[in-house]
Structure formats: structure tokens, C-alpha cells
Length: 587
Image (tube, rainbow, N blue to C red; front, top):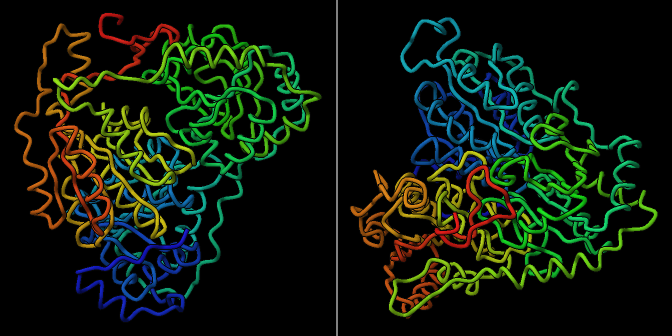
């Protein structure tokens, strides 16, 4: 996708743009070597927050063509870089200074790690001879982030720092994607060097196996041929491997129904007859029924997390499991794989397809899945005498926007409603926090997605009142950069999912779940320099959406929705997917 060039009111950024050239950065110091490595890797945008220890890197960026978006908080920088990478398919880059700057990145790095999103984080560090002395703004950044990165590096020399940064960038995207980090002591950044970094390359010891073993392919093919009730499960790995086309072709050629995980949303068009949407705790009833009754589950690019599986003993209990994944560590980690296939998702599907003598005859099974669609439709009641339903808002937004709209979200009830009631037909259109479940992800993610997207693409953030408040400061960035995003807040004055669980499992004791003191988000948006609307009724919904989408800049619609509305279907934690509840009394 092409880079979006947004206007900015930052005079320093304007001056830097005026001085920029198309020639690569000249390497004279460690910091210029870092920037040259980013340029060599094709980096076009970075997100970050300035500070003392990272200042030499920013000084080197001053004359670079790399666009820098200054975020309001380092967590926002990590989330923006994460979402940028999700939309673009290349690693996002974020920067922060030492100490609190680096530790403020931790939530965003952990989020990227859980969702296998490629991110490169660059952090400043105190000078090498002061490391370990408890110097001002010193933190053991590599120690703190070791458990939540694919790998991290402590730069030791200006002569090698550029190659280290290039390696970290390439490693973030190699095999199973994930975040990497390079910690940059200030003396390494400032000291002189004329050693130019080469092309970004992952270490030889970390090259992923892309082509699966013949024996694995053959065994998987035979299992699929035997199946009477085959089911494809597309996870986020299908999207990350850019394997959606080959995956869709396999499903349609062999007439095999498809369910997805939440990160896999968009891998199969949700308006396709064979698509049963996403499965798991709040997945569709028909997706969960299909998983419960399949006799051959063909899972591609998923780690079988607990939100998908519920109780492991009751997950796909009748199925032989074919598990395709590029990361061998995921095979049989949570769900036993009867037929493991280790390799790139697209290549593995092609190999299995070529090995099939004939596909399974699943006509009766497809009809059964379609029957479940009729039996357990995704619908909701919207009586005129009750407050505005959040599901209605999501459907109205979906109807008013183009098919390929990019949707980001925070975490909570609003996230589930967005995933349930928006019809996604393409990959890399759904951008959310899945594994870590990070409230506050939605707004900075919308900024990163907007910068990554083409000019003519629409970006909508479906957020909750509690999530929005966690990173609301990033609205100032959207205004400063004149980013055309629409934020739709499903405001129920609660941490909604917490309230739902308290009502269901804690006898209605709503401790610390209410947000009755929420500000007027429309007025707050105006104070930031954005446009704002408040919507209280069904009649107001269409006009507010139309006006917000038409506004060329950041807009915020505060939808006051029914505070008593719950997310269903719901599988209780650790429960059986096939025993999903459609109301609280069924839990």
C-alpha cells in the first residue's frame, strides 16, 4: 500500500521535511547507522516519543525521508506501530527513550507478542559505562522485555549497531512474526563510525522452515480424504502468511465449511456460504456447533488459545486434528495434533491440496452447517421502548462504509459486537488486541492503520467508553496529523464485560465496574480539535454516521447504548463450545 502523506501542524516536522532528501543517510555515527539500516529495510514510517537517551537517533532521523509520527504516550506508539504492520504486512517501528519511555512500551510489545505481530522497538539507554549504576532513567530494558520479544539486543558498538537493527527488523517478520527490540546506549549512538550496514537479514540460525515434510503432507491428505465432516479453521497465521487466496481456493474447491479465530477474521469472506464466522467464547453458535461435531478439524495458523477452545477435553471431541503451523512449538501445545504439518500456511495448503487424490464428500455436512446457521442466527431484540442497542450501531456503521473498511477496536463488549456484527470480506481489515486483551488499543491502532492505509480507504475505530479513556490522549495526534478516522464509542458507562461477568458469576456485585462519571466525549473531542457528536436514539444514528464519515479529519461519535445489553452467544470460561449460552440464565 502507498504511504499516506498527512498534513502536520508541527513546525519542527515541517522544517525537517523541507530539509529532507531522497538520498540515503550518510553513516558517520552509530545513530546515523541505525537510521541507514531502517532505510535499507524499506521503513517509511516510525512512531515514537522523544527523550534524552534516544535523542541521537531522532537527530539522525531529522534529515531522513522516514516519516516520524510523534505519539502522546509510548504505549500509543507501540500500538500504532503494531496496527501499521498489521495493515501493511511489514514490521511496524516504534521508538522510546530509556527508563520510563522503554517501560511504557512494554504493554504494546507484550500485545504484539501475544498476537504474533511484527514490530521493531528501538529504545534509548544510558551510556554503556553507566549501565548497572542506577543512573537517571535507567532500566534493564533487555531484561524486562526478554519474555515478551522474539529476541532483543543490547547494542555494543557503533560499528555493528546498524547491522543489529537490520537483523532485528528482519527477524520480526521471519517465520512466525513477533516483536523484537534493540536497546541503544547513548555512547553507541553518538560515537563515530564509517561502517555502513548491509541489507536487513535475519540470522541464519532463525530461518523458518516453509516447506513441510512429505510424510506430514501425505498423512494429512489421507486424513482429509477419510473425513465425512471436515472443517477448516483459519487462524491469524493465514492472514499473516498472506495465504488467504490459497486458503479460500482450497475451501471452495473441496466444499469444506470454514470457521475462523478472531485474529483470522477476514481470511474467509464472512458473506460466503461456506463461512461460519468465528468460533470460541463469543463466536457464532453455528461455528461452535461445527467444531463440536466435526470429524476432521483442519486448523491452519492458530495456537488454540483458551478463548477459542474452552475446555480442551470438550474441544472438537470427535475430530482427528490436522494442525498446520510455521511454529513447531505450537504443535500439540494446547490441542493434540494427530497430523502435524510444519511449514508456511500457503505452501502447506498447496502441498496438501496437490496430494489429495480426491476431496472429501461433505455435501450432507455442509447442509447440516447451513441448518445450524438457521437455528442459531446472530440477531438481537431492539424494542423502541429500550435504549439504543450497540449491535444496531455496528450494523449501521458497516452498512454506511465501503466493504474494505479497516476496523480497529479496544477490548471488551464493544470488541465482541464489532467482530460479531461487522461483515468482513478481506484480510487485514480487522485490527484488534486478541491474546493480551489490551483496553485502549483501538485509538492508537486507528492512527497506525490510517497512516498505513491508502488515501481512499476508510478507517473506523469501534471503542468502548472505558477503553477510549485509557488512550484518549492520542486523539491529539490524530488532530495534529489531520488523520481521517472515525471513532464510534459504544458508551454504556461500564467496563461492560466486567459488569456482564459480575452479573453472571458474582451475584451482581458490580464492584468498580461503573463509569457513570464519563465525560461528554463529543465536547472532549471538540476540545482536542476533532469533531464530536452525541447520539441517544435510533433516529439520530444515520445522520451522525454520515456526517462523521464525511468529515475530513478525526471525528468521534458518542453512542449512548443500552447499559444492560450483554454479549451472546457465550461459552463460559473452560466450558464446552457446543453448550454456548444465548442468555444469562443458560450460563
